[in-house]
Length: 360
Image (cartoon, rainbow, N blue to C red; front, top):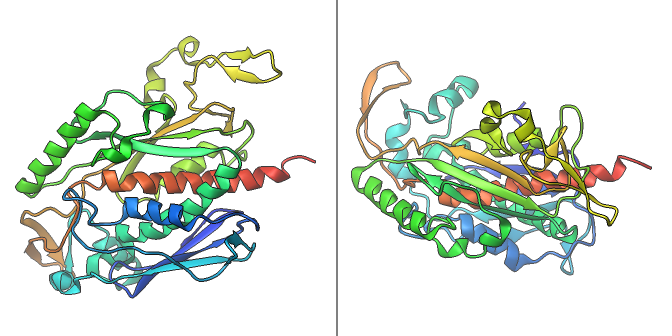
């Protein structure tokens, strides 16, 4: 069974390959009456699309979305929402040399091992181009969350060895789109751009870390025991291409802290509401949101395709020397920011709907 559907009540199914005719998806479970802002959805896709700057792959795709069902007179009807884009600028001939070759750290060998057959054109289904459908679905989820006062925002914390050194609050993220690498720290942003240009000249790649904040989350979202909120967030973002690590709140740092330092003390606000004095838990306790902002981070590995000759093997088990062709990112992290937001939004929209049945 091939798992191409994500979510329980708010569900997204995606389809398509990097060099196929089209990519798209179907959203099922979105409540009726939601106002659909097509300009907002397209803007989200523009943040992810290739060719948006000299720092990204120069594949030229407009990624203009076409919604073919589930919306009438600007609102959702409660029926499945289907959407797609057409691939136009795919240079499949640039991948002919990969018909029988396995690229190091790519999905070529593993897909061949699983299916006995693979689409070698740009990675086929394993290509990051599949994330178009996630961002489109996530944009609809964001519109639903907006109705509940919930906002999802991500940014680049580090690229390679360049690190901002700290996480930022929501109010500090208003201008991240003015940074070519979507980093709110101007000095760090300039260093990141210089590093990417350096690696581009060297034919090498690098990874980085994306931080995400979810603001306005009410207490009570999350499903014990196996669908804990952080567990679903982890699964969501770890399904993104090149993602290698996830942590929320203090994350791995918590392992070296004392309980007296890590505990979030509860405070009575006087208005009948309860909040915490600190947020070491990252807004989640016992797998359920506690009303504080949710903070998490995702680590991404370097892009596997480098412009340097690498030894590898082919389907016959013969040793070969592989030289990369085609158009590729040096660092995918800036373009992954809207993807992280989208996957987080899908999780939060799903749990928002699921929580409606938690009590009489």
